Length: 215
Image (cartoon, rainbow, N blue to C red; front, top):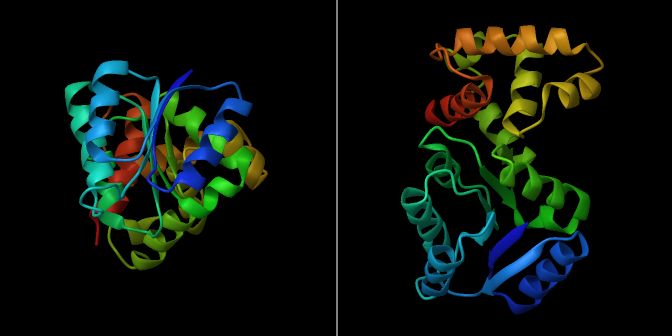
């Protein structure tokens, strides 16, 4: 699996390269600026991009904007964004097109190799990987929102795991319930969020976007 990595801090970039290579990823390019990232994504067509939100020369959200532009040019390009802090706007922008293949992780999460690699693989496969801390903050801020407040406590637990990108089987194992029960909960969630009929993967992304859009 070919990866384009964008991170301006040398030590972190080098560490991520070594970690990804240790798990049999091929590093197509490891760059440190927005222009370099744009060029690499256009020319190398990687299987997944791992991108720091803030890159030179602007040091604002240049990495994110480069990744979003690349997704517009190549719809569905898997992108995992790394950020130092929880920024709701970044997560919303990533999910705005309603497609999967996106992730948002806090940089602290990369020190857990298994969790980071799992997120890269899920995003590369077209799924979502939202940082648990991001989802936790969003849920706490929206506890009284409608239709968010209409979810039962169990549905909110399921929704949090859906937002992290977990499969029905993984959710069932963590909550110690059956996969059939998880499917029933997710169906109820989709209904309460008034999501249009479509494949479940797409509706999962729309459900996360609904959380991000209510606030």
